[in-house]
Image 1: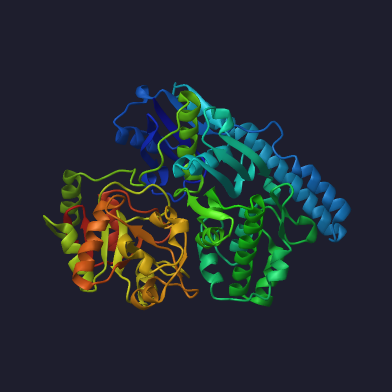
Image 2 (image 1 turned 90 degrees about the vertical axis):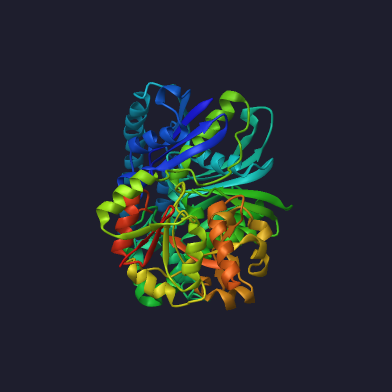
Length: 565
């Protein structure tokens, strides 16, 4: 059975499942070059079908998200009551908050009742049968099915989905589709941890839903935040109902990114302190919930944009009652296309889809296209029979090499196919390379590490084997890592590695293996190949433009080595 999955929220994407196997997936942003693009992913659908070798007429079902409860969010009424009866706010601020909540309720009702049906009408015009699932069901399914595990807990958390801002599920492979995923709780949008973290992101001067990683990086620069008690008062967790609580009645939490009342806190405590407090609070409330779910060790799978927070994922893995963690690599809304398609496959066939095998699911570049682009660029280039060895030699000599080769990665992380590579021994690289790429980051670049040596560099890898393949979790570093790869180690002595082996990353493994032969080192810097605020490069033309804009010295474009001189 051939199923086309579609997601239409931020990072709109398309994916194709053939007989339960994920064969292609791509985000619209990579094609139209508009970061985190929102809407109907027309180009992505065409590309995903082409990569799968299918026409739209070959698709048996289209699957997407958008199924919503009849009542969008009953918690609105509870919040109005709480503000009126329990709030310590002034009457003026209380009325302001009530007006805001009513406005938000009307907005989300309009989205659910108007925009979602309009989108679904566009899907139906593709003239294929359609399966529809809720937002967080699709998130949870991406993590459950992707892991391949027989049994696990699934947690989803984000800013907003049509059915709330988070869920908890008990998942188990059973004969009946209806019994395989049991939803234990749904988190209201008004209790959104995504909006909680995003409001701090905006207060700190960054763009919410895009720059939360900068807040995470800043947090490590303050060990004991003085603002913790204030920030912690904004949210809490209800262990009986298995959901979170936005303390709107206490005056600082607002289920929205805009919150001018947080500005005085920045002036009083400073940016690093506030960042550390919001990170500590997020870790604490999520870990309290998961710790309460089971007293015995259990596997936990995670999806939703909040779990792009790699330090949170590490903290979850360190819990005593967590046996192992899996994070769906495209944890944000782009991953909904895959989750919805897998749900449809399971429901329609009764069979479980294949576990995720790779994130190299996008486009690759043909030789003819490369030659056309290179000829037009005027740049010098040469084709190599063993480009992996040549790249390793350049890296060993201290050069920066951008690489655009093989099938493009699906998801937010560059995994070696659309990456910029450099030696990990130069701690100054985070400053000068970010300047070249017009980036402002507070975390170091991520390391790519040979799997056969990984235990020499990191603690506790066994609890995050799969996230470590996709840069989805930080790990505490051993002294050998701190000494040999200081460019990849943060001030809190953690790193966010991509663990490389021949099976999962054959081409990239070839480069790192050759580099190890020359240098004896097992780590390379791997950062995404793109200029600041642009999507990761997709085509040969994208690669040439980013290469020249960043004034980088070498570009490996498939088997061609391009020089910028």
